[in-house]
Amino acid sequence: MARGGINKALVQKARQAILARGENPSIDAVRVELGNTGSKTTIHRYLKELEDADRSRNAASIPLSEQLANLVSQLADQLQEETQATVAQEREQLARERLDYQSQIRQAESRIQELESQAAALAEQLQSAQQELQQAQQQRQQAEVENARLQQANRDQEARLQDRDGQILSLEEKHQHARDALEHYRQASKEQREQEQRRHESQVQQLQLEIRQLQQTLIVKQDELTRLNRDNERLLSEARQLQKDQRAQQLLLEQKLQTLEVAQSALATAERKKDTMKERCQTLQEEVARLSEINASQAEYSQNLQERLGEAIGQMKLLGHKPPADSSGASST
Image (cartoon, rainbow, N blue to C red; front, side):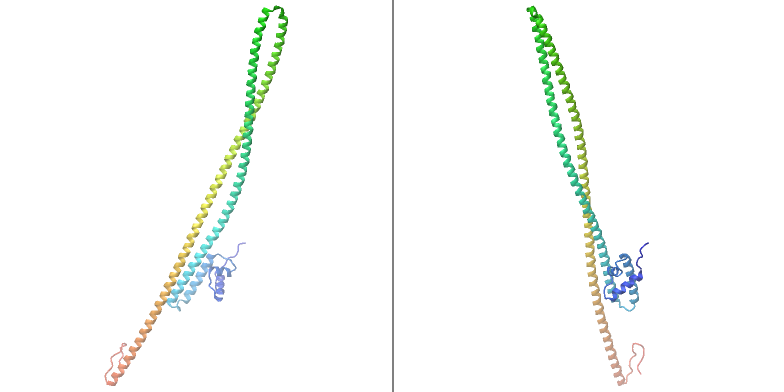
């Protein structure tokens, strides 16, 4: 169900109760009397209607100067109440916005701290990945050096074998009787060479397998490093956006403060206008008093003239002369 609002009768009753206590029936006082219900705009409208009705009833019996003074006072009070209501609403709105802004700032600071923690953790992971990558590169370089050494040893071995074959051929020509022994030696040397070659090929294959594994590990680490860089860029972008939002909130707060300063300046101007109107009212009251004194002086002077005229008419009667006609056209008998 909708809540019932206030009406003019309730406002009139509250106003009369405040006047009976000898207090000023302002908007805030009437609202307190009504139990802090009703909008200030509605209360102000009803109070204005009631005050206009009172002024219309009392206009015939109140002098013009007093009506003017009451009107000036009422206008000044109304202007002050409206200004105070506007300033109070602006202050409440500013307080709510300040609380919202402070809450947003705290949330932004918490988010920034969280992002900084994440960035530090990502930096540590990046540093660890770089160290692992550096170690893998070192191992790869060592493997390449070892592979080059083994290849050079193979070439040296082949060169020595070739020299040995030449020496064997020369010995066959010179030493025919030692051919059988030389053939046996060559066979043994060949088998040894094949064994060494097979062992060398096995070592080369093992090193190639290790190199492929290291390359795969390097690719994985590079992918992780790329992902970490993307995450770091995203976090930095979010941090810059939060800082931008914080600057926008700060600018909005400064604008609200400027609005409050303008309202306070308007209130000070209204106060100065009120003082000016009071001075003008006092001047008018002094002028009315001076005119009243002049009017009384003229009335006294007119009365003196009437008395002197009466004395002159009496003297003329005593002398037997006909008195002149008075201002109303009647003659004395």
